[in-house]
Image 1 (cartoon, helix red, strand yellow):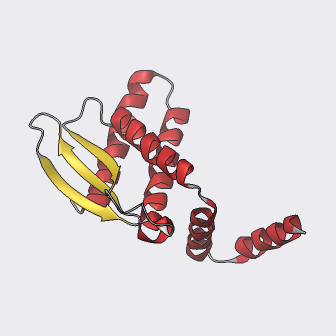
Image 2 (cartoon, helix red, strand yellow):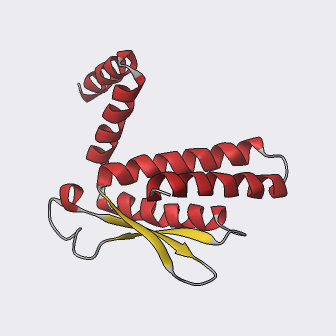
Image 3 (cartoon, rainbow, N blue to C red):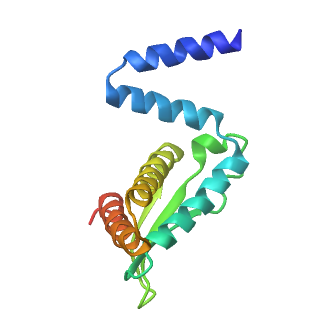
Length: 145
């Protein structure tokens, strides 16, 4: 019975305009996300952005805002702090607080672009150069610079 509902939901989503389908997918994904998976994604995104930022002056760091995840309703109240740090000076250049929906959206964007760049690049040097441009683009878009 559950499989029929899932298949029907996917059929409906496939007929929606792209932006609405993306929104529905993100809402659905956030609904099924466990707390452990969420923490794993925060750690994974930190690893990916650290790789993307190698050789660059700036680095993105993600952390759960203390106390925002302690409620039984953590999916609604959790806040993720995204900080852009200058690696040479250690100064925080920008900071943004994301809700779960925004974090999942950013997670998907960065990980899919990083995977795409790695798949397209033949050598590790080419991959590193391409990843640096992806990191700069995402940092600029999300940090308002």
